[in-house]
Image (cartoon, rainbow, N blue to C red; front, side, top):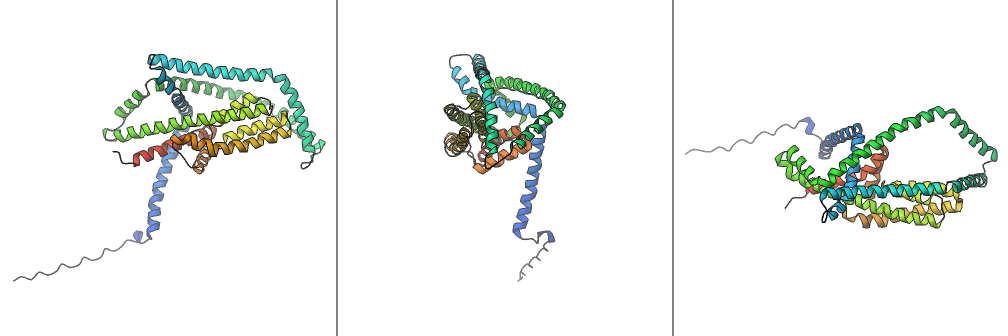
Amino acid sequence: AYTVRPAAAPRPRPVPAAERVVPWLRIGAAYAWRLILIGIVVYGVFSVLGSFQLIAVALFLALIVTTVLRPLTDLLNRILPRPLCVAVALVGSLLLLLALLALVGNAVAGESARLAGEFRGGVHRIEEWLQRPPFRLSPGRLSELENQVTHYLSTHRSSLLSRAVSGLGRVVEVVTGAALALFSSVFFIHSGERLWGWIRDNLLPSGARTAWDRAGRVAWRAFAGYTRGIIIVAATNAVLVGIALLVLRVPLALPLTLLEFFAAFVPLVGSPVALGVATVVALAGRGPITALAVLALIVVIGQLEGHVLHPLVMSWAVRLHPLVVAVSVIAGSIIAGVIGAVVAVPLVSVVWAVLRALRAVPP
């Protein structure tokens, strides 16, 4: 008979010194280097976009135009050929925009003489207001401030003129970007699906096409929903502000209303800035009482936008926490100025929608 000896127990493997750390520290280190890699990639992407800022901004504007005019084009396509629908939508929107700008220009030109007198009287009222409590500025101090401003303008006249001339280059860039955005929007509106299908089938590996196609469609729905929602919010804010400024008889009510509309595209920040400009105009043109009324309007519009319009109108888009919106706007403004503040929130919304779509298990 043979006796079977039990196998010897394996000797315990010595634990390396690198693994003799607490689990939470090891997990934190694993997340840390991955976050560093993600940060490097994000920084590289923004650096590349900064080098091609004009092209990136033009394509972003083209996507916005596409989200606005694509439903109108699809509606007209029921009775008209597709190319004619694109032409009608683009030309009609351009004519509407030019008519609005002409209306604003006529309003400013028609009120220029009256506004000059009101602003002169407004400046005098501001000086009298600063001389009373709590500021108690003496007339000599106000005259000294005026002399300092005049001296600064006369001393730095050449530098200010050179900055104005260099600003003409920015005008050329703006015109170029607008032309590229219009040219790109024609193809996006006419055959955006075919462009996306060509990119998917020719530039992506076959195994990743399904996931990328799902991510692309979710990203477009999130971007389109956010853009249309923010346009509705901006239009609502502009109408309310315009009515209030007309009731308060604030000068330049129509241009200030248009400024409020475009400023509302920067969430949480743009609308208060535009109403701050309206407050200064009201202070110079109508006095401190009207300026205080416009200042109260800033609080009312901010509460209405944050607690009513955004939760109701933006319900079909990707909803983000107000803290995420605020951090995104500040981070975008640090990276790319005003353009970054405008692009930050829709970019974060699209990224969050894509992550949610890719994380879900497809049926």
